[in-house]
Image (cartoon, rainbow, N blue to C red; front, side):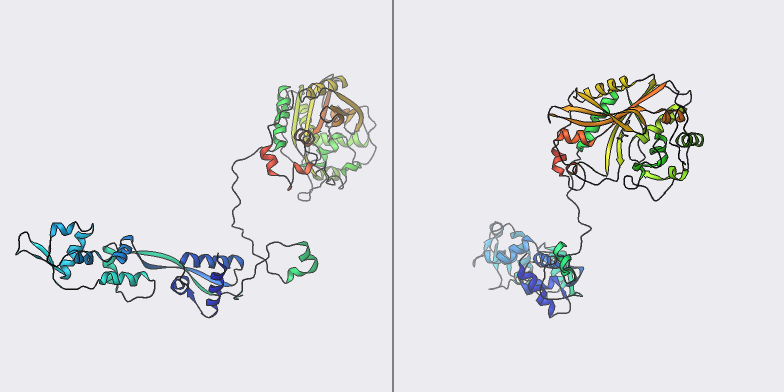
Length: 497
Ligand SMILES: N[C@@H](Cc1ccccc1)C(=O)O
C-alpha cells in the first residue's frame, strides 16, 4: 500500500466531518479499491484512528459498448458520418459497421438522415449539415465520476441500449475515531522482556489480537512417533496373546494407585512433591468395602503370613484423588476384577499403554506426564524364571536379545528386578524397565487364589521412542517445542524383529 494514500486520507479527514470513500475517487484521482485498501491498512495498524461504517451505493458504470462509444462516437453518429454528400444505397451503408443497424434507426428518428426514394435504387442521404453527438457527450460526463446533471430517464435509456450498467458499490463512511491523528504510528505486536523490565509497556500502544484469524489449514494429519511406537508395542503384546486393559481414567484414588499395591501411607511417593493430587473432587467414596477392610488390615496388622507395616491405616489417605502415577493402578483394578469375576479366577495376560503423571522436575529426560507400557501375567505356579523368560520373549520382539537384571525394590513386588539391555547402536547397557512378582500382601486381599502367582513389568514409552528416533531431549518429542517437521517426516517405526 502506498504510504502517501494513507497519509492523504488521514489529512483529508482532518478537515472534513464525514466522508464517503467513493467521493474520494475523483478528489484523489485514485481507484476506489486502492482507497479502501489504504483505509484497511490504517485500521489494521490502529483501529482507533478512524470510525468506518460500510454502506452501499448504486452507481452507473459504462459497459464495454459504452466505452466504445466514447472512443468512436455513437452508432447513430457513425452512420451519419458514413453517409456521403450524394447519398449511399442502404445495403451499402449497412456494411459500414456492425452497429450500423441500430445507428441507422436512431439517426433516422433524430432526423439526421432520410431515404431518397425518388432515385433508383433509393439512396440514404444526410438531412442536416452537422450533428451533435449528444450520446457520446453524455457518456463522457457519466464516466468522469463527478456529479452530473444527466437525468434518470436518459440513464435508463442508455441502460436499455446496454451502454451503461447499474452497479452496487460498497463504500465506507468515515469519521474521526476516538484517537484520531494524522500520523500513523506502528503498533507493537510483541511484548518483550525489555518493555516489561523498563516499564516502557505502559506508554506503548499494542496491536489488538485478531481472534478471527484462521491458522494455516493442515494438509493432513500425522501420527506422532509416540503413537507409532505404541502401535508396535500393542502389536507385540497382541501377538503374545495379551489383552488390553481399560486405561481411560487418568484420575485415580490413592487406594488403587497405592494402598491396593501395599504401598504404605507414609511412603515418600505419596507426597505432593511426587504426586499430583486432585482438588475437585478431592476424594473418592466408592470402594469395595470388604476388600478395603482387608487392605487396611494387611497394612496395619499384617496377615497372609506377613507382619504388615504396623501403622494406623487411614481411610482419608486412601480416598485422596490423584493423577495416576503408574499404570500398575490399572493392573490392580484389573486383578481385583479377575479374582472376583463370575466363575472365579482364570489365568490371564494383560497389557496397557497409557499416560501417567508425576510431579517431576522437568529436564532432558523427565516430563510430568509420560506413557507407561505394562505387561501382567497371572497363572498358577508362575516363578521368577517365567518372568525372566517372558521378558526375553517380549524384548526379543523389540530386537533386543541381551538382557541383564538387577535386584530392585517395589512395595508391591518381591522379588523385583530392574531390566537392562545392551543397546548395540548406543554400545552400552541401558535401563529399560522395572519388573517383579506381585506380593501376596497385594494379591491375597484381592481374592487371588494362593497357588496363583502374578508377574509384571513396566517401561516407559518415551524412552524407546527417543532411542528409535534418535532424540536425546524428551522435549523434542512432546511439548510446545516439538518441531512439527519431525512429526511429519518421521518414518514409520519398526521395532527390529
Ligand atoms: N509401576 C512400576 C513398573 C512396574 C510394573 C509392574 C511390576 C513392577 C514394576 C513403575 O512405575 O516403574
